[in-house]
Length: 126
Image 1 (cartoon, helix red, strand yellow):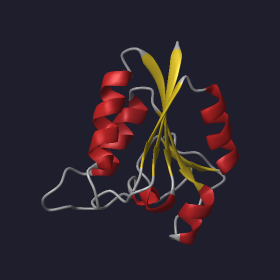
Image 2 (spheres, one colour):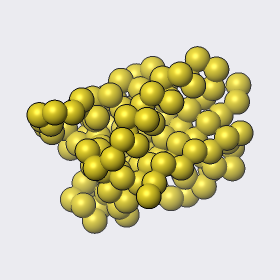
Image 3 (cartoon, one colour):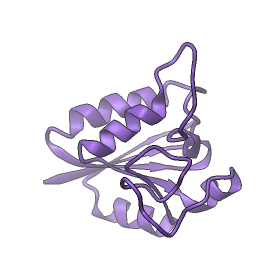
């Protein structure tokens, strides 16, 4: 099976990139293995307890994608700089108590692996 990797850099409610990535992943999962890497402010996407009044809850959507087989990872340095810290224990597929299930904090080395194993890469950033 071919692999698609999507790299996001914008926070969840600052642009439409989060929603675009969600829709691309939903469609791609029918034919591709999909990796999503959250970098810079995109590490805010999977934060629990966000209650956007006029937007879909992006973290919930990405958790659903993880449940459907997408690999969703957040940059450790970016996450740490914004107060999200990885735990040693993995609970419900996540290693961060502040994140929705299925989403893990990891290093840029994993991004490098994702990119090298990908047939296609999409970067959604400004």
